[in-house]
Image 1 (cartoon, helix red, strand yellow):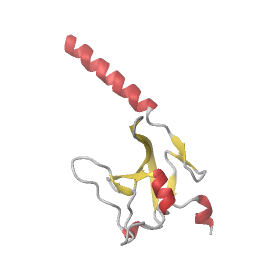
Image 2 (cartoon, one colour):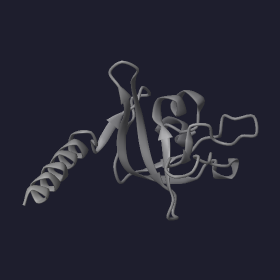
Image 3 (cartoon, one colour):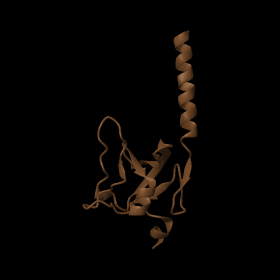
Image 4 (cartoon, helix red, strand yellow):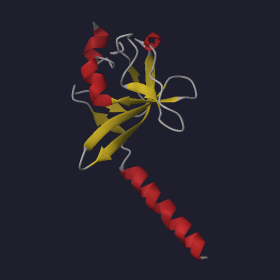
Length: 126
């Protein structure tokens, strides 16, 4: 009974954290609102070989792998928004992206905007 109570409390607390820490949308410094379920268009990678510096496979058991240059101008679906960091060091906004395969990708939103790794609506219209 005691174990069941502890497990229930842990499940409820982690669920509450996930809900408050995972909004459905975020507004970038470029004024664009990025919403869960919408598509974004990738720009050009900012590394010397045109691979993406701020778009990579989700960290887990292995080292994240940067998205290769061949993904430039492709669309990816926003699966979620996440904030990483702490009060002391600051927070990063992470877009969790799906690219049509089973792998999730993370995009550090603000650095990707500054580096041109994500296109804004105005850039897509030109």
